[in-house]
Image 1: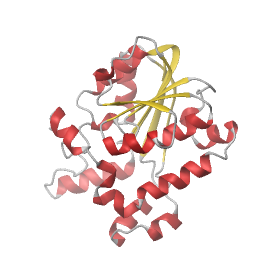
Image 2: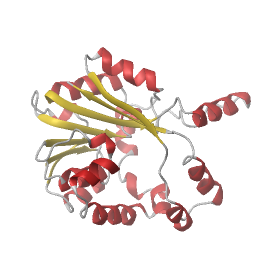
Image 3: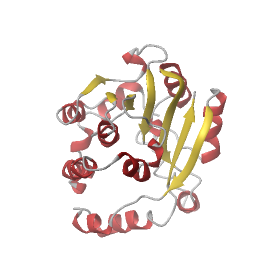
Image 4: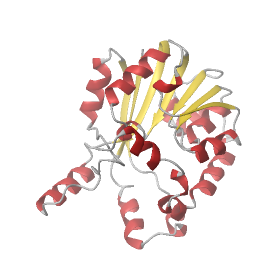
Length: 247
């Protein structure tokens, strides 16, 4: 398993790595920013169901914000924006697009005050951290009573992931999703729910969804056909999950 320094090193200039270059990811994100800027509140909450409980003007924290897709939605709702992220390039990117107060590093290093945020968004981050329970406990500490935490992560209960793991095990291979760095922990639906309930958080919603990849995007990605097919298959299965809990 990676240590904290290895994780920090790995996520430096993360969105300039070959995988994201193949997607032309920054330009793809910019196109989403432009589209989101034209959405009304009801359209945002229909498209991003995990933000249903986010109110206009709320203090919004995006943990591991990446290139800021979550921030784009919150900004359109006139929220007060905060973000944490390891990657310097990603932080520069979001600051050039949004009025956001950023912190480079881990969430507890930011030393936010108790009960400070109305809504915390953490998308495809919790599976990368060294101590998910401590992460969730820290988010509970800094969210206000009555506030919400929205956690997005791969759904290891998906039939596709189950098939993938069994096929690897039959071949006597460790499943490559459990690589000790990219994904430090994996969460079946029940496990993620139990961890949040152990922290005495109330489950407000918990649902699964597919990858949501558009065929038009797949055609232009600069990647092998096998990887394009892999992403297309993930459109059929419920490979991701969102859990929204209330303090």
